[in-house]
Length: 256
Length: 256
Image 1: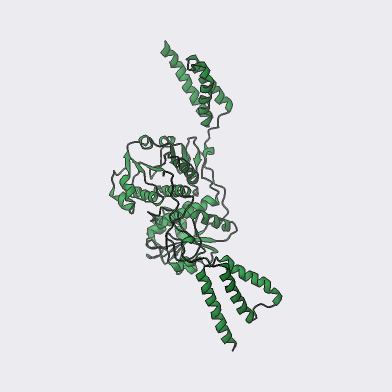
Image 2 (image 1 turned 180 degrees about the vertical axis):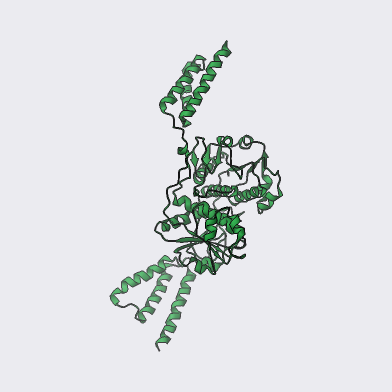
């Protein structure tokens, strides 16, 4: 079956900035999440266990293009210097008066800017306690996820995944890698459905299915509706006709 | 700072069905992803390494309520028996003519049904090769993620995370656990902003900032706009007035 490629998305993807990430595994899972949704620019600020990291590479499960292109910075200021729209992701509210948006609204803004080649980025904090307030203050807006407040613990790769997913959903207008249209089976013509239904009706008529006769129009309408709802393909109509013929054949036998 | 709780969502959350999951760690991460977004009904079909699983419990990072309530089934048919809307998640298109939707559209349908107490569920396949076609055939619709076709490898917990996120985003109308409104600082009144601006303007006037004088109206308009855009709080206005006073004081000194 052919895979339909989503309409090429011309918005430049946002940068992902990890502040003092601790575990290489998490950096790798972040790279994987980025690659899943077409992000590629990963920036690391003082990764605790150094860089490059074999653990990150293996945890990225072949998102090596993201790992190999990752850059290390000494400060958040340097890491965001070239960006013009920065989101700080945080799971808890801060004593900083700044607009708070969800990943969907952030994606709308990132894509809108990206279509004009204006670079944006998302900052993510340390595994244990996230971003500090000085880092949050560097952002234009705060992004938080619509989590269940009673259970809000999201790991860093999961937060990146949701933001990256929303970015791509918006950037590609929700285009999916494949669709029902990829199915080679042609939709059935109304004529072939009609013939199949006539076949069914006559078979049932011969067996006295439509009694009392005054109920027949309603029953036929309901029966027909079942098949109309099903968006049948040519092949499916052929299968159904086989089913009817089968019943006709043995139905007669049974009456002997 | 107070956390605002999202408007109570009255739609019953969808069930998550894992077909023959292999690693306990993945089951745990699935439970965590579910808990993050308010899902709780986890159903396992023949988990390879048996059930209960200590690995699953520890990987769930305290989503124990989901792990402990998880139920094991021998077949997909049993696991989905009570559901009335079933989505099969798959990363590749199948030779099965069935509607294909994204996690957002699936969430719209799940929430619409859930608000009428009609139970829905998402089926997820094995780590290595997903759902088989017989399992997909049991679903009403196929759900796939808008991934980058050149790098589509998503692990099972990530797929669950995105579907659960979308469900909650729709079910709570995007309500976030906190917002700018939680910031205790009162927005500044237009009057205090106006006084602050008059203060700035007079200070600049005294130093001959507005030259040539005919440009003054435009410059003032642009300056004022900067502060109007900033959605200043009372406290921020006080800080700015301190800044102006500071410059005034030393500005005069400099001129001695």
